[in-house]
Image 1 (cartoon, one colour):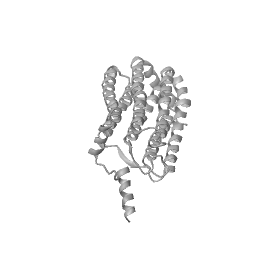
Image 2: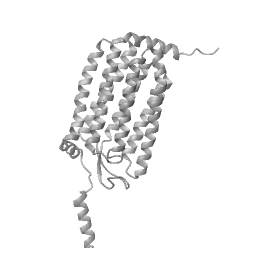
Image 3: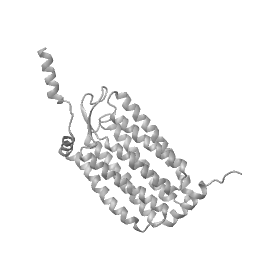
Image 4: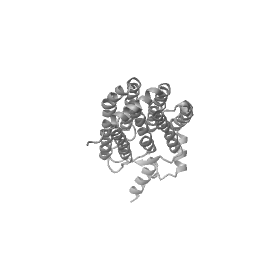
Length: 283
């Protein structure tokens, strides 16, 4: 009996009591980790600057299709600044006990599940802007956006599953399968559309940038605390934040700057889009 009590006390001393932390306590934990906290505030600052810059850049754009590209793209930093405020405040962060088989099995690990909400809302806007730039049709646009949302949601499921280590990786593989659909449309279907629309040069640049950056997310998931736990939480967070900076803000600036200087091409793409997708009814 005494041995069991001593063993329990030793476990508590070693791992601490179960972490059922309040939001304020979670926020304090984030603030105490300077490296982790900085990964959030860097994006908040850059998102704020990006919003002001992009609104200023779009003030003279008049073509409806170009305006839609601007609206979709500006929504990306708007979603990001909201999401990162959720992370830094402890609202969208939780401590989850890792399942048996995980490198940190039995330990409470900080899980930044709010990032998945960001990606679920922001990455479809990126794809919408790219699809409009390429002059694609609604079927391809619907396919890639739904696959993208499914990719983010199944990634969230992988991060939140604590009942089975194997199921975490199964969710991860499902998410990667949806990612392959996104890659197919980006790399195979839309380049042909962009050639017809006359936007191939800028589209191919943004396509390469997007594909390279988006590959980084599943890699950091696999190496981070949610996967193999090779990287620490703060390092993983900076990995995600760095990818967000390039895949969102730099991407958005390149896209919107080109649209602003080539609005006539976008307007012609709009006409081409309606002509190609309109099919007369059979008599």
